[in-house]
Length: 469
Ligand code: UTP
Image (cartoon, rainbow, N blue to C red):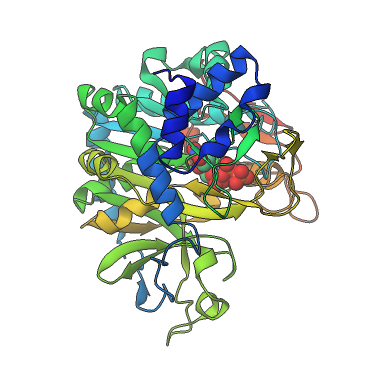
């Protein structure tokens, strides 16, 4: 849809946003067209909701003490028999081809400070395999084990969509059939000044940022991916984030537990490293499930202990979920709530010059996938060993960085080797003397590794075990 200048002015007047045409007289024909297209694309109903969520503009809708009647939801207690039976159920679903994999990879990766989509970051300790390669090879391994397609849905954003697609293309989809890899871009949201006006980043351009991982629901619907999933016979979706190389993709046990519980949403949680670790906590609030973000917990709540001395909010979510597809489709129709955050937003000043603020100046908006929780009647929370499955790449250095993720990957592979009776050479301080890398298509666990290694295998130096292409 294209607007004339008069139509654009009328549209903006209706929502008190005429300042977007402030630089009109200075723009050339191309820039005018660009601006008109952005104005035409503005979602005015959404704009009202955004304004409503700004502090001070409307009465606060969030309770003053959101933690007042909150109790944490502990993980299920599961016996080995429960887990084995669930694994069987999960494997059956995978063998029927009823499972799909959903990756959210539209984030900006600001903390890592890496140019390009985070999934293209080279993480393999020896191979320099990218995060995308590591994930895709796990899917390929699973596909080979169960003999059925495991369609891979990859959410990108406008900023990284073309680069992500080209990266998969250049790498032959890491061995996956290209027809089973589906890319779709999430939506973008404008930012607002504290008084509700939309921020211009340049005289002809509104500032826009991805609409959060919760944007995945609207994007799945808008791009026809939900229909695509139905067409392929998918009933259950495994959801994960791009930054965790240890994730056990389409883990049959987790899928089986979800199916056995007839859950609409299942979440993996693990014990927090320390009470202050920045993880969300699954709770019951007013009879509903919810995720409480670590920023919402007071210091006392983070450190509170029960009678047995355990932290009351001991377990954090690591954003590894299983969804029932029907539930996800229902949530996509209902829509998730909007969150605003005061952030540093680049803008253009009264002269039209680009400015980068050094402190928060405007509000950005996002949706969060875990906001589907309050609508779920049946939720399953399962704990797992984080050393096996969680080591995210968030920061450029220090905790949760490429260095820690590589070390955790190698420690995991070393444990598989030890479990198979192989002596792993160590440095005096207990570190690994050599680097290790095991391609998921070679083995995805200690048992598979045992079946692969030649009898009498002796390890002498750096070890790079690759699977079939
Ligand atoms: P993070 O919250 O870690 O954000 O995203 P980020 O953008 O990757 O990194 P920072 O905060 O800028 O440093 C967690 C997961 O959610 C995805 C990310 O790609 C990552 O897999 N995500 C986040 C989206 O897909 N879209 C978004 O708008 C935000």
